[in-house]
View 1 (cartoon, rainbow, N blue to C red):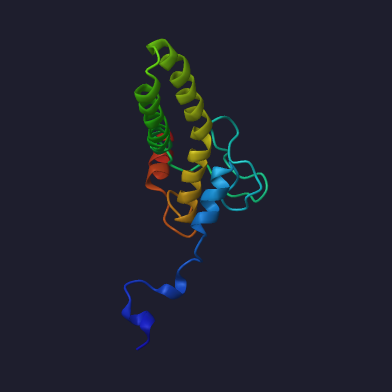
View 2 (view 1 turned 60 degrees about the vertical axis):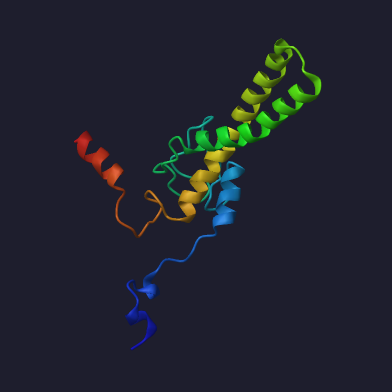
Length: 150
């Protein structure tokens, strides 16, 4: 017996692996995770339905709130130590804190939200999640949406 017969899945029929780092890097640059050329977003956080260059379907991603959670963690890990260091070393008035940290936090959050969402879409594409597997079963969420529309 060959090694393929001893496994739970037939490895000979497995689709080719997708490069996770490259897909996430392309998504971070707000480009299509498949080709890296087409624009991923048509608006600030709205993804294109398909890539204008390679035709990759992008509409079925499920990034949801995960990018926002990641941005909160990233910005928090940068801003909080800075606030504490400034307070401990200089003790400026609270109005100075408000004038510095509120705009910085808001600006960093808005600047990171789109690239982080792109990276999450790239991750989902690389792992063939949520309909990105052209040979896999249909996405149950999409199937349910189609059934409710009829």
